[in-house]
Length: 311
Image (cartoon, rainbow, N blue to C red; front, side):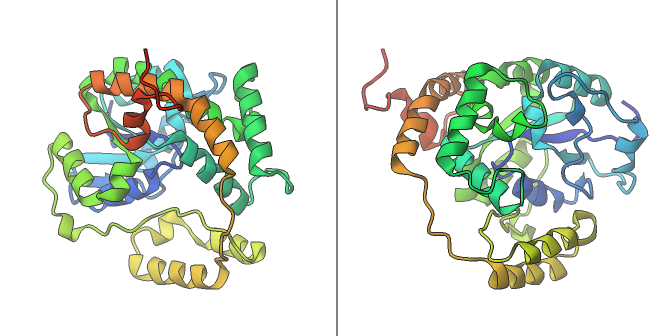
């Protein structure tokens, strides 16, 4: 590794608080974050069929860094890239510190669906959550390849975190850290302090703004949303909080509509049963790795959906 390339990467997963964590870490004086959060330099390797852009393109994102101890990027799609992506990351970056964020896969699936509907994604206009779940389950059960069309429907598959975790642990070992979304949202100052201790950094949490970033909200006007998305440039606004925060507050006031929709209870029960085996395996794995303060969706998986202890 030569030159200004990242040595700290938030590699996953989407809709699990990676944007907020990127923001928190970027405020630390010993961390230089890329002006754009999701560079996605290694993303062409997700699916194993693409090739990397010129390394100069990657390096350019960190040209403004000085002598900070860490250079940070966050591209949550990396987690599902498998061994080809991991091996390429090791070859290009050497031994970076890698952070993974996990969230209850049922809550994450609901958030992902609402996010795609609110951000003008390519879901059919009439697709309900149940219809979306059915398509996601079909993609998982048939093993369809992650091409551009099917990637919209891999949110169920992507929630089986344990199926992707081992190559990351094998490649990065103690340079890998798992952060749970639920712990971060409940006590961001405590979780950031713990993470900075792992990085060998001291942190003054009183100097950190713990605002929630990339919040999914239902909108009244798609036209106004398009204007807001075009104006919300990370490169322009991320370090101009004095401008971004009031603009975001004004936008929410104008365009946010009440959200009466809830996940259908029968669908939630079905999904919790679907994810239960993967969650149990993940709980076992993270306990073996030394994690003890597990969120409820993992600690409760020591019982099956009917409440019986596993045998």
